[in-house]
Length: 223
Image (cartoon, rainbow, N blue to C red; front, side):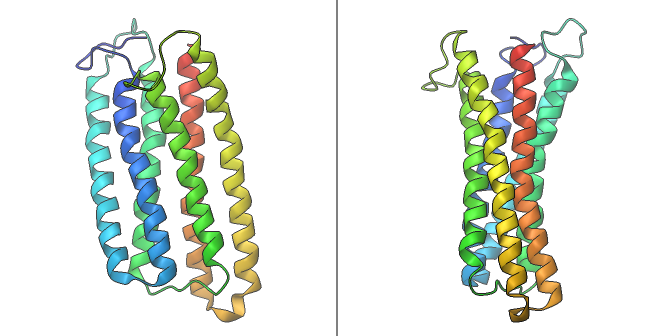
C-alpha cells in the first residue's frame, strides 16, 4: 500500500508519527489528572504547557501529511480517507489541550470520592489510544512490531475492532463519574460541577476520536 509525494513509502508511517503525538498527549493527561486531583497547581501548569507544545508538534506533522500526500486519482489510497484519520488523531491532541487548559484556568476542586474514578477514566482512555498506536505501529512495520506478512492484517483488524469495546468502557466510567459527582453536589458549587463534567467529556472524547481513527484504519486495510 503506497502513496506518492514526499513520503514514498507506506501511508501508515506518517500516520504513526502523528499518532505518537496523540499518544503522548494521552500519557500527559494521566499525569495532569493526578496532579489536578492532588491540587498541585505548579505541576499542572507545566504539564499543560507540555501538552500544548505536543499539540503544536502534531499540527506540524499534520501539515506535512497534507502537503506530502499525492493528489493523483491513481493513488493506492484515497487522500480524503487518510486526511480523515489525521483529523481524528489530531482531535485527540486538541481535546487534551482543551481539558488541560480548563484545569489550570480556574481553581476547581474534585469532591471527595471522585478522584479515583476521574483517574480511572484518564487511564482507560490512555490504554485505548495506546491500543490504537500498537495497531498503527504494526501497519507501519515499525521494527519489532511483528507485522511481517499479509496474514497479519486479519489479526490487526481484530485488534482495531476491540478499540470499540474499549471506548464503550470509557463511556461507562463517565457515567459512573457523573453519578458520583452529582451524588456529592452539596460538597461543591454549580460551576465546578459543570466544569468537571466538561473535563470528563473532553477526556472521554479522546477515546471517541481513537475509535473513529480505528474505523479509518480498518477501511484502509480493506481498501
